[in-house]
Amino acid sequence: MKKLQSVRGMHDVLPPETALWREMEQRIVAAVEAYGYQEIRLPIVEHTELFARSIGEVTDIVEKEMYTFRDRNGDSLSLRPEGTAGCVRAGIQHGFLHNRQQRLWYAGPMFRHERPQKGRYRQFHQIGVEAFGMAGPDVDAEQILLCRRIWEVLGIQGLRLEINSLGDLPDRRAYRERLVAHLREHRDALDAEALRRLETNPLRILDSKNPALRPVIEAAPAFHEFLSKAARDHYEGLKRLLDEAGVAYVQNPRLVRGLDYYNRTVFEWVTDRLGAQGTVCAGGRYDGLVEQLGGRSTPAAGFAIGLERVAELLPDWDAETLASPDAYLVAVGAEAERFSRGLAERLRDQVPGLRLVANCGDGSFKAQFKRADRSGAALALVVGEEEAARGMVTLKPLRGSGEQVQLDESALVAELRTRVHARRRENTE
RNA sequence: GUGGGCGUAGCUCAGCUGGUAGAGCCCCGGAUUGUGGCUCCGGUGGUCGUGGGUUCGAAUCCCAUCGCUCACCCCA
Image (cartoon, rainbow, N blue to C red):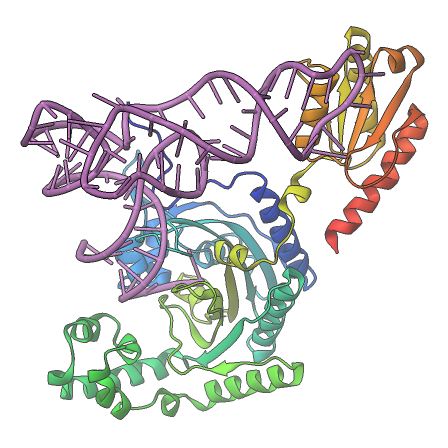
């Protein structure tokens, strides 16, 4: 039989690494909620049409990266390649974008059929936020500040913020036309790649690394000359807000998007520590999307964080410790086992947040202590015939200093409460 | 879709110019009759990714194939 294996580009997260992920997610969510964003839970599968209409028919994502399949009744469905489309769809469907502001966040897996490499997977995970009903650059700035706070609480340093304005749709159309015209005039100077992009995504040609194209690219019209007054003011407003907040940024006029729905502000947080996939977080405005999907015209802005990439940048948290239980209950002998089963349940009742492993599968004191040690527990609780007969429990610290002591149950509960509390505080600092 | 690197025990790897498989870690037991971590002793565990070829003989050489990985491309 062929060896069973996970699908290419889709990975398991195992303990103790899962503890790192939980910690990371909890901190991000806490930061997001500190700005009043509320959680929305969305389906992983949507009608294919939703993504075609929002992300864009001719984008790489829609053309060749979506997991698309037929439902039993013939509908074309797709695994979501990103979160914004579903969020907007839900907003329109339930009418919660009408005439009001909304700040929402979501988290979960996204799917793109790409060739996997470092930082790029076929199932990857994002936490994203979307804000609706706010047209000014203040929300853009707020979201960038939110990002900064997230890096702060995660202890991640050295990210570079890049920003740009894509202008509004008419600006972009006008620019695109002029750019295509310019490139057509110099068709002979273009390479095969550029010629292909001329039809699909001409803005991308500006990114070409081929030095032979440099003269043509430098002679191309500059986009910022095509920005409308309103878009320019918006962009200037954003920069002023960032300056006031003390956020450092780099203007990158070549920062564009693989998704068609963005307009005006786009930004990315980038690292050079991850190899080729350096974008850790990307976002921007998409004022036209709600209307494009059939809702009433609604300004909107959002961003998404790539969790696999962020996880790679995390400081050295001690996964073993985060994942390990507080105590391991050792019980040897029939009487002791009986007593310890009841004891374990009472302790879980009375000590909030206690993570207690009760020994299963018999074993000598020696064997059970070995298990206790390997479980990573800070404490061993020991019940032998002697303790069981007297209703006592021996508490033995397994890490650090401290002698073992015999306690009755209420003293044990008190002791565990203070230890668990102290440990929780430690881990959230 | 294209290219580079790599596939040997659960994990990390060694195995030189072909002579038919090893270490460390992990796991289990013992030295310690109610006490883990250190040390020592013993043990479990591999169709050498898969298929074919060359050869008396292949983990080792050749071909194919699959997988992983990194990069191009694209993006979170």
